[in-house]
Length: 317
Image 1 (cartoon, rainbow, N blue to C red):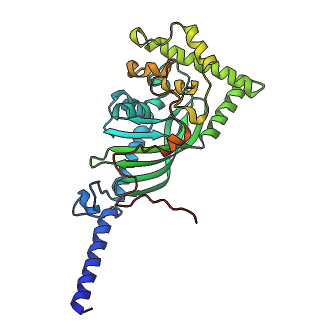
Image 2: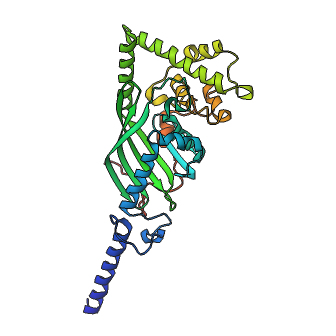
Image 3: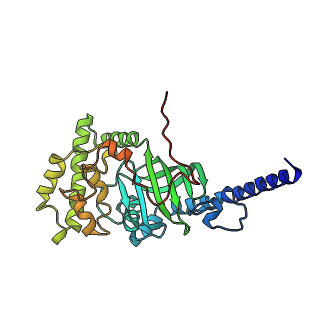
């Protein structure tokens, strides 16, 4: 190879390195923020930009900021076509629904007086893992929840994609060790009521949670939104005709699912009252099995694997 050709190769390689540094540099100056810097139609943010966007979301999630966000029912931190899924519950589509669930679910009794508070209000967070590239962030965040009489930590792991307006377009979230956390909640409740067994604890908790859901129904679900003929019918259905629910069944036909949805019913009764009722609406239903959930191609707004990478199946020989 001649000197001239070698020089061209070197200059070309240097050009690629500069382009790459602009795509993934940690706060480095870039000549453009257009998507083409990464060779695709998706945004290309610096690491520092993605860090700040990520922090903005978590600041909004903290109480009482989340109360104001929930009241808006239309938070612009989410794109109009946002697609989200929480492992322990189910998928949430659209800005309004995600505003209500991601923020409203953790407002406690602030917007639903009288409800039993099992989730707590998020009052602090610590980002313990964070990785970001182009338009994707991945993190593990330990959130401290205030349950009035005690504080408890819970780790939330997430993958998030962002659009050019710095809005969340997709998220895939799991509450890590949530089964262990619920066990501790049961143990605390058992000590509080002085129950002698787990079965007795579950029975008392079932009655208390059902009362809370029925109270929310009676307060907000009247007229065409009414789901139960009477308080007795409501209590009978919630305590005898459906199961309490396991941690991963908070988006299925369970009491636990309806407990979660009582926190949102004040925002849009016409949407959320069916979730408290016998039908479960489109949220508290047994409509999917394990395999269909795992294999579902839910995320269509942008690939979680950026910059031209493709899925691959590798068979072990």
